[in-house]
Image (cartoon, rainbow, N blue to C red):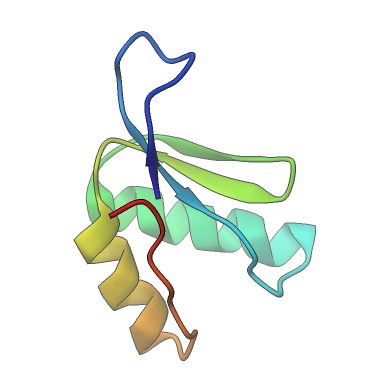
Length: 73
């Protein structure tokens, strides 16, 4: 999903509900940041990637074998 609250109008792409441990999440964030060309982090078990990269991230996660459900449009 895409969120702008508390971010001065800047959007971030949020990914939640992944069945991965903390180390695997960090590895995923690193790959997503590199492929999207933007910053990102893991907060409270959710992945945050700066900017609206929903389509690219959905394609990457599906290629990794995850079932993706889009939220918020």
